[in-house]
Length: 213
Picture 1 (cartoon, helix red, strand yellow):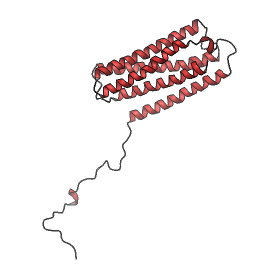
Picture 2 (tube, one colour; picture 1 turned 90 degrees about the vertical axis):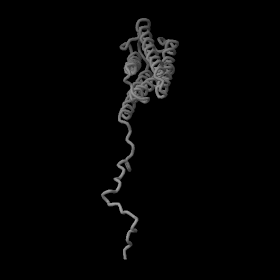
Picture 3 (cartoon, helix red, strand yellow; picture 1 turned 45 degrees about the horizontal axis):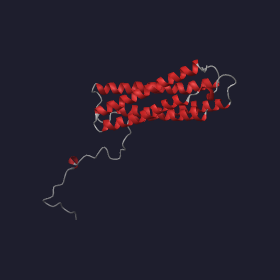
Picture 4 (cartoon, rainbow, N blue to C red; picture 1 turned 180 degrees about the horizontal axis):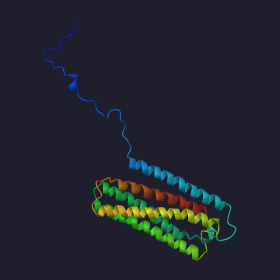
């Protein structure tokens, strides 16, 4: 004996049933831009690790001729450069926070301060190299120390240059009013890159100017 449906109950045809939620069982996918930047920074970390290890290994063997690290490095200048770069990490961080809070003017001011500090670091590096070359005679080909030093610090300065250019491009886009939303992807990615460059410099500073002396 089968149960009959109550007269007041309406049975919904299968064709009118609610469609299944297409998002069920599907995990949230990571943002491709962020994944790409993370992969890039990991590869860059490997690259700089290799350069730092090469500097340490070759420096242990010493140099037959030419100046040594203890003879050429001037710590006060390097400390000023290092302080400028570390400070720039704070300015870029608080610039992002200001943008997230909707304070566009504060964001632009702090972002510009980051550009100025990064440029100051590059100017300080050029001044240091000028002194090393013309006062101490340390060139990239004079000995193994010169070769490894200029390769390591030079590549880092190149990355800082790329960072300053990227920061300037983001600021220009913001001034033109084309930076959409409170969490724009260019700000996030350039901020990650800049923090990475600063962290790399901390290791370079410790290895080259502190331990290597």
